[in-house]
Image (cartoon, rainbow, N blue to C red; front, side, top):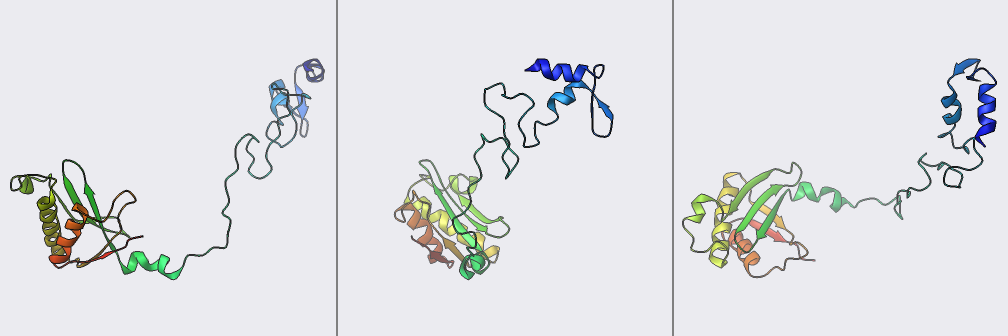
Length: 188
């Protein structure tokens, strides 16, 4: 197999001539058609299968092709396109075993406008426990005050998949509503 290739290459005194009589080294002759979509010089590659290239994306055939959507002409509805501008602020509530935190974030710029949590120094000293219902109510009131300072009076809240809208989360949202912030709750 290699004997024929080397004989052809060495017949011209150690170099192989290609493309307009330009001299190229012998290794160029062996590797020049690897990515051209053709079979290599040898009738079989190292693995015993011809190495073909994929026509669509010029990658080896072993890679998976990108998945295409079922409906390529699908368009977003008007509501899907404008909801980030009509309701620009979102409420995010995080409740763990040790603390409670909540924040208001602007959807378009992704900047946090107001943040409150029981880990902050001013709230830590006042509360007996940092993760019970009174702590959630206190976080909601402080967040509402900070939101009004930033001229935010409306927000929307969508609970995470693992969260239920009850107990501590409901206490935070209810204290925001009682403090004057209009919160729209979207439950799926």
